[in-house]
Amino acid sequence: MTRALRRFLQEPDAAAAPVPERCELCATPVPGEHPHLVEPAQRRLLCACTACGVLFSEPGLRYRRVPDRYLYDTGFVLSDTQWDELQVPVGMAFFLVNSIRRAVVACYPSPAGATESELSLAAWADGVGASALAGRMEPDVEALLVRRGDAGRGGGPAQALLVPVDACYRLVGLVRLHWKGFDGGAEAWAEIDAFFAELRERAVPC
Image: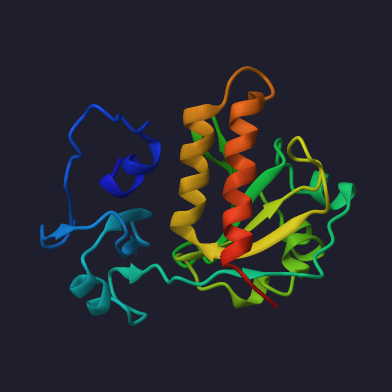
């Protein structure tokens, strides 16, 4: 597990001294908020300093910088039948274009981590893939994060957001840290609700 992923899975310890993070390419110390890079061939997420982030901002290189773009599909609608055809057993999932496999990959958060789900082209095209955001995803580094309308305590309409892929791993970390029992528990859903509220606050409607 890379340091970029491990930081999302650790419970903060107020008594412990913070462990300084470093760029995984040049070992330069980095602040808490720093760029991330994706290595598509290995499907790795790496911490980076600003200089290394700029260096790998162009496509076609070994590493790709994760952008800082948040978009929200205001007209997104997803029926129960369309969701069921995705074969995702929970009410949240993220979808990304894998440039190595040349395919759309569906993943969902679980207490065991990010779990990959089988995804047929028809299920993608007729449901989540019909979102206004689906065709705007940058391969490997952005994802379409979808929350079913009844996923959580409050219900509400389904949501679709285009987000940096590292935001999806933040969600995976929240689920791993806080999920209790069969249905997650009140603490887990409060964290998930707050996470989606934060993303909505940052997202620009499209």
